[in-house]
Image (tube, rainbow, N blue to C red; front, side, top):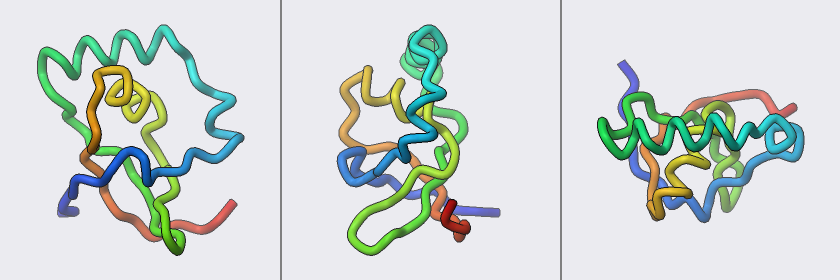
Length: 82
């Protein structure tokens, strides 16, 4: 089982292709759910020199930003660069 760790949201880079798929309505719904129940599934990031790159979880990341969180629970994974 993978262990999650808290990572600074400011150090997570979101690739342009991923940003294009953002649905603000979905972010609002997720933010409300996270506020009530907490973040149930950590996002996935990979290490890339001095920063982290988002692999999965754009809407969860944006929902945490909306709630004013400084850190987010993440799984650190090994992923190919796109």
